[in-house]
Image (cartoon, rainbow, N blue to C red; front, side, top):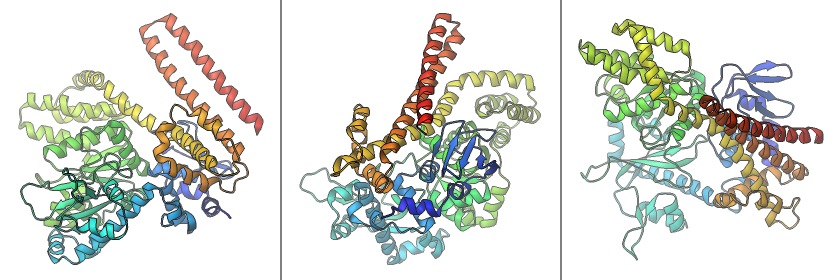
Length: 581
């Protein structure tokens, strides 16, 4: 029996898949592009149609159509399988998420979330007051259906009882974040969401992973918005609301619009801007969210397009989110603009009160974030030159410092000088000080971006190998000895045990009828050893840089010796691999 992976690969070439995400150029028998996984000026990302794979000579990204979609879209294997199967028109059969034999715990959670989404939608269809409210907020019936908006009744156990009737266990319902255990023993579980308009949050492949509920009747005690808790399928710091519906439009229009709330996003889509995504109070506006997670979200948008328009509220939380997103986006090479909104008006208000054309005008007239902030600072200073200069130094120069290009920095320094009257030489001196102060932040952002792709590649190989080992361990006639893999991961194997069923599923789908499994495993082990050596080499290169700065010749000599040994080991691995071929 041919696996769905093989069928998908027969129908979708690496060129078909990659070219639907990024622009490719001919390079002899291969194709090339600027790498979507790291910021670069000249193409180092090559696609080989003959081998059905890709490789980046800049960051080392490599793989097939499945790894590409996983890394580009930020999906797990099942998500990539679903997306590519849908695109290729390949039925998944026994590997379908609806096939109970292959359902992992995570897959059951996706199905429960679908059940809940449909149930909330049915509730809304039967509750006129909530429908009237949504209509008053400017939502059309088709929009409500497209976004699968629903309603959670003002009842302690409405959804819980429904899911129990579908034979879901208390543990599964709680794990999905849909119900909670009471503090008092021997009491029934109760719904997390009650008396709320429900907005399903989906991942990049369209699977519902969480909810955001807006209070319908304010009792003065409940939060206006309530989001799902962290679950095995939802991390609040690694998702953008609406990304599943926006990604194609972002690629087509070559820019994304980032807003704060669900209503901002939905009305923007309804107004024709389907390239809008929202933070939903999750991914970027929370100051405690790590830079790595913020870089991950903005990195996904950058892979779709390097251009972004920020349209956040003018309140303190909105300005904080805009500041955070803007500086990080500039640091990873994006072109960042800000939409000009009336004071105290968010995109949803603007569209509702002034119409879609007003929103269109705000997006069209958006300004580069540095010029936007400059204009705002000078206006707020009201002729107070000292105050304006202080705002420029503290609020605007950090954005200039975030830019990579010296030419761009020079361009904006001149703009700031022309608008404020501050001599360019003085601005350059202050910029140097700001760059020194922000040196650590920029290093953290660069490292976070670098680590994102490196961790994915190394973890991907580790996951694939352990999946094969777990799978081979449970069958009667294994093709490889799983102990050879378990021994290699004895220090980290516990980290993967929670994902065991997912790993086995992935291995089975890929290798069920593969006669080359032993040689594939050998190559993966070799690739992994090379990844480890690359990590060691990167660390030593940093150590060398610091030793050279300290002018410590003895330390420098020791590090150079260690680097030489690492390079020799890496070349030895490559030589063995080449000779096998």
